[in-house]
Image (cartoon, rainbow over all chains, first blue to last red; front, side):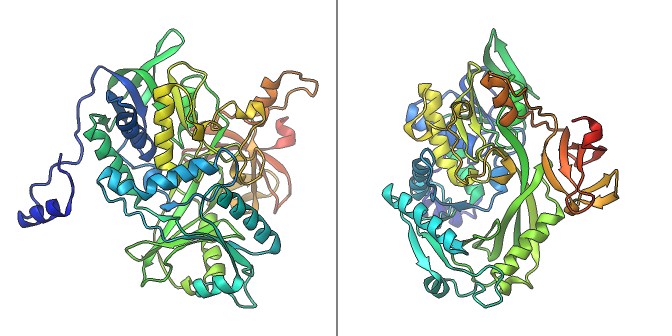
Length: 418
Length: 88
């Protein structure tokens, strides 16, 4: 496997780029593995990578029903940040942020992390108070946060609507300078290549259709192309956690909803940061190719369809226009939807399950992409040691029974409200 | 755009409606002492990939609560009744 470097780029350029090796193998499955991970998205591949790298567990397979990163890994708006304030979330997302900061070097693969900063706008004195509280909690935990008043936001983001006619006046913003964006496909490919280098088998085009049981214990999976045995089976299938858990007899505190995202035609550099609207569910950034990347709200009804409805298209674009009147004549280039595991408190699961041999990583709601590195890191820890790391200790299934929901948004058990 | 055939108002756009919740979830008896049934009622869902029975509120129409049978993979609707007549 080639180590990527300036020298390798130069050498391959001189030979017409014809001798690049493939980035990962396409092996036949072994009859059995120590750990089998279901789902070849960012989280599954990261889990495999950290199992091999941090814990020396290299007899690992990742089984994917389609192609790598073809699910939610390639369907998000690529934002990374760690501005969480609930105990259980704060340090987990900060671990993720710290892993992001060194990820390209660690993987020897450019994930194009761009720490361009993220603004959460506030539109009322109450929102400013809430932002101040959030910022103080972040800073108390060693995470960067700054609070800006209206004039400072106006100086930094002059293209927003500050007129008297603005539907939601901007009172200020909370800013995390280390937040930003990363290239989502590269995250899947980088982790796949890294895992493969450590000997992990990546098995694409194999859909898991059931489990192999040994008494009450899961000891492998049935796939569309044959059975594979494994001592531990780990689900990383957010969006589809519900029915993969159901095959194992589990009922989860999750509903599946679709979330849409949009890219406009390429435009000259305009938004050099990430901006989140505080008055409606809306966020905007600009890709390196120039397209404005927009995200909005859920479609609100359960859906596995991977396509969104028109009412949310209108809602998202109305939000864009309310916040940035200058974008009103841009055309949309692409539009898609991903299916989200919406958990009942808006927070994820990285945990053992009540079924022996089965481990669950899911319930990511809107927030899965930014969590990818820490999710893999903590899930690998949980699988390898059969106990959670301190940073994912609260992401259990039994937190609902114990009354310890991590409700970052304070919405109650209404999954489409998180 | 999902179009819902309201028993009172006829075929209307989804924008007139608000999604309510999973209609298969039943509240335990109020004197239920165990936490299990309450846990299932408040938090746990079947979350099917396929046909799903669910409440919708025709909030900008007749204001009736409806029970729909809708496919979560295709968004096709095969049944729509008034919730009070559905006995749920």
